[in-house]
Length: 457
Image 1 (cartoon, rainbow, N blue to C red):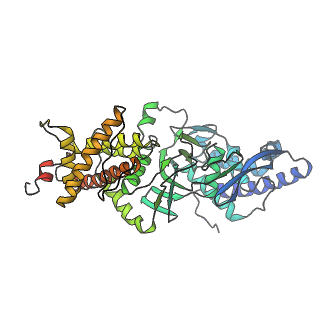
Image 2 (cartoon, one colour):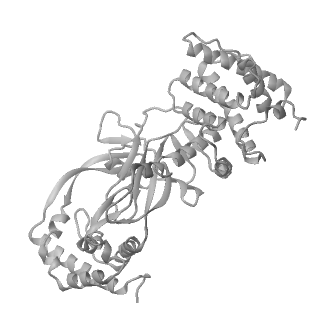
């Protein structure tokens, strides 16, 4: 009686018997001749740091490369069953993969997949059915499926949350990376922390990442996929990852940015991991992003609203969100102010019609009416945004900006002033997203007359 559901019981039985025989052959071989290599590998030292250590690893591929395996009766039985399977046989001795990558699939490859699960770096573990069943399920799901599963993993620098996982959609989540996943990035040369002089020691590990899973059609034989088709696939452009990062930055204050995006297949046909970009981890970051447990449900609701209504790339709100988000990545406070004020112009000078009045006044007036309802606070926001417009102009033209007083009369620093611009823009973008979501007119424009004169519909 099988512990798992299988599509081809004869294949299961043949591969089970063959795996046991191969392990017996390998065990006898390593007693006489064992090829070992020494290499440097990353290992976990504690929750926050990883170190490079020398270790010895058995070269199992050399041990498995012999004729004794293919001469066994079990191997012949396995080849016979594979050749009679109408789904599997067309995939043998040809390229199998996706539009991204493919590998030549040979019957011996399939025969060795379960074996490798029992061959560790320095030992052979005892055969057991649960391990075999687990890998056999992956083999069948890969060989009989019409699609191949992939996932994009994007570690976030500066981001932490008080939960192990946040599910944003069926295939989209923010997760805490496992030790295995962190080590995979290290093997790619992407260190998810910083080195203090010693290149073989990394600490301050950034544990959280955006994870997006998807499926691509399986391609058997020569691929006929153009670069254009690949570029247009929504999972290859990193737009989904950027949308989540934008949402996090809009939702609350805090610095975060993507380190890299690794694209990998969970299928046994995988031929490796690719990554699309790399932003080095900054040694020192102020005001890191912390998503509290009490904020998670509210953020998920905000994310759903933000993604409900698609925005055109050149839409005023798309431009405002993009420049607001880009300001979060700037180290220079003057650059941040420039980005934030471009976002302000995109939002508050949108839907202007034929009126070409003085821009600074129009931006300040609309911002004050849009952000607040209390007259005194509206007056303060109006003055603040006028000063913000002047500060941006001074920066762009190379002169020293003159900062206004805070609402309590004390002096601003440039960082504090930039922080308040960001605060008002965050309020404005959230309101604009809500308006777009609830508006009957889906032109994605703000009716400024209704904002300025609330009684006018």
